[in-house]
Each structure stands twice: as C-alpha cells, then as structure tokens.
Length: 300
Image (cartoon, rainbow, N blue to C red):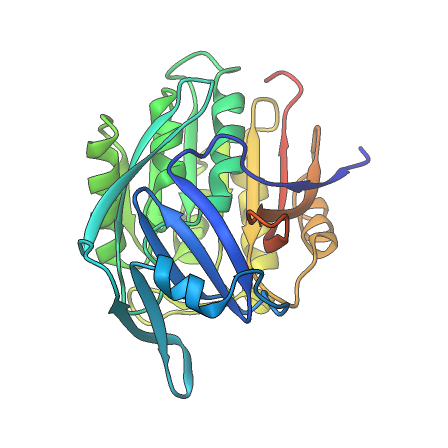
C-alpha cells in the first residue's frame, strides 16, 4: 500500500506552548513556567530580542564547554525543581506528567509526541477494551505507556535506565492508572527473547535514540541495530489487529529511511503514514523534531 507523507504537530496542548525559536535555542512554556533550552535545529534568528527571552524565562540551560548535552540550569525566576502538567485529548485521554530540571537539558517530556499519544488513543478505541497487548520500547518517562493503559491495553514498558522507570511510575499513578509491566533491559535482547517465546502484541511503539547503552553496558547504535530490531518486531506484531509507531530523532535520517526499514520488516502494512513531527512557535516558525512511520490495521 502506498504510504501518505505528513507533517504532524499536536493540536490539543493547553499546558505547553513553543513561544520562540532561533539562535540554536527554543523558548517554551510548560504549565506556568517558561524555559530556555538549546535546540540544534533552530539555526535561524530569534524573533524576539534576547532581553525579552531572558525576561520571560524562569530558567535557562547553560551547556558545558565541549559537551552539547550536559550543563546546568540557571534559575532566573522563582520556580520549583519538579512540577506537573496535564495533557487531554477529545478521546478521553487525561495524562498527568511530572517534569523535572535535569542536567541533560531534558525535563521528562517531548511535547511533539502528543500526536502519537492521540494515535494510540484512536487505535485502541477500535479494539475491545482489555484485549490488546502493547509493547513500548525505549519508553523513557512513559507518556505513551500510560496513554495505552488508559485505553485498557495490557502494557509492557521497557527502558534501560532504572531512574526513568521510576519516573514513569509516578506518571502512571498521577494519571490514575495502574498495572503497567515495567522492564529494565536492553531492547534488542528482550525482543529476541519475546520472539523465542512466541509472544504477540497488538501494538508496538519504538522511540530509539541515536546512541545508547543497555543496563549491562550493551551498545546501541541506531544505524547498526534498528534494522535487526524492526525485523524482530515484525514477528511480534499481530498481523490482523495492530498498530505500530516508530519515532526517530536523528539529523541524518529521513522518513524515507524509516519507510524502507519498516517495509522490509513487516509482511502486512495497512494505512501507513510517515513524515516529520514539528512544533510551531508563536511567530509561525516550524521546528522539526524527528521523523515517524506508523500504521494500523484496517480492522481497527
């Protein structure tokens, strides 16, 4: 089936806003607090003056010299280290998400992923409640896992970092959910075991990093490992009732690469779409934030 190419941006955020972008930075509102963070893709000029950014920002992330990812938060206005925001969509999803200022510029949330939470909502509402099993790999702080659980799925959430599993549990509990299965493991090794067990899932979600380490030091390199992982996922996905989401943030990857990988890994693909995720700032500049490929069966 011919896939549809789309550029997708969230529609239903109230507690999040991208205010301005440029100068390799982004200015964002998360609930009542405004943060200034590095953004390597924002290579254009800022629309607001630097003085306006600094006046608005409650905190600014200053990078360490020689390390573009690590640094420290400079608190400019009174704000807590930890706080909570909500995400709701018209399909009944209501997420409470715990945020925190970390030393790696992240705060526990990728707002552009809301389009995939909506896709999970739409897909699972087409399956009889409680009849779907969902596997979320590289699951980070678990918004997608909680979204799937909120619609009645039996969810397995896997990440290699124990601390983000704990963070995910807080998000589950704050969102009024329970009974997600937590796995601290290397994604490739776990999926290999699941194939040997003959497991079957109605939903698979992947958001792999460009580079990473498993809990026992296993090396993950996106270009080297993603093809094998997707072929294994192709053996785990229910061929008749399914949804699948692949999200990747790599400056060297296009969604056409994702399309070729998925087509070579899954025997049956219905209603495929691929393209870019983006957020639009208040000055109508569109910030690209990763690529996606997703599909779901026609019966769903």
